[in-house]
Length: 201
Image (cartoon, rainbow, N blue to C red; front, side):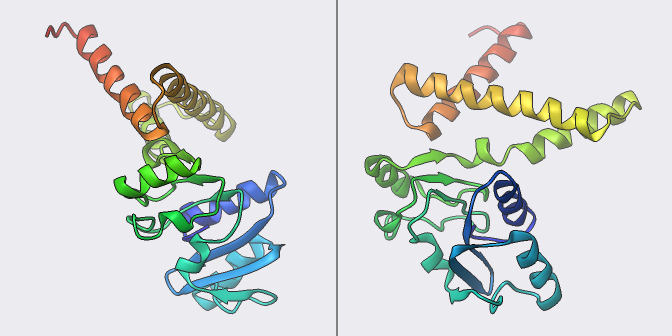
């Protein structure tokens, strides 16, 4: 996890609870690494006390850039944009890049990762959950009727699962990358909405 704020710390805890091993996390001051695994809850407690994950006990300090190049199954850039570029994309060893930050992978890097066979979940698909729940909040406020947390999660799961499989469908149909497939799905939805409202072209 590059970035250990609201996005990075949450996904680390979520994956940890699903049985994943978290080997490295970082924040703006640097990162930590332990190949045997880190407890993301304890790391967050440490960060809240000290202001950073750096110097967490039983972990090796590393740089944010070092974290990007670690051999792992899933790399979650969750901090700043333009972290994976044409200059460093060839060094990525992760099998999957799940983009929690906005624009962490440049277009040039995108092409390199595709050629390397790295599975990508583009930012506007991967981190859309927060915006979706904001929409749910807006709907609830309009109705003045509020859902229980379980109902929110159920609705979110349906929306995000459908969005993911719609992208997979476009990817397979047109033989394109995940990011381009996401754009295709988005544009198709805009076209469908325009048709439903009587626009002609």
